[in-house]
Image (cartoon, rainbow, N blue to C red; front, side):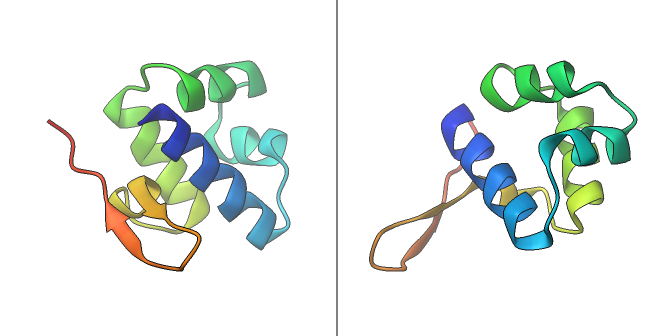
Length: 77
């Protein structure tokens, strides 16, 4: 699931013309903390900060895009 979060954050940053360091700055955290959150066990408040800084919903950070354009939502257990 972390891979999906990381891929979506990188995709959204690219769409918005942001670098990860810009996103980290918008979230008021350092870039290494953002990277750890994207690829590790991110806390809910960090995920919420990502969503706010990117202007998207928390759930959209967990959408899975297939190569045929079908979007699935990965449910958190």
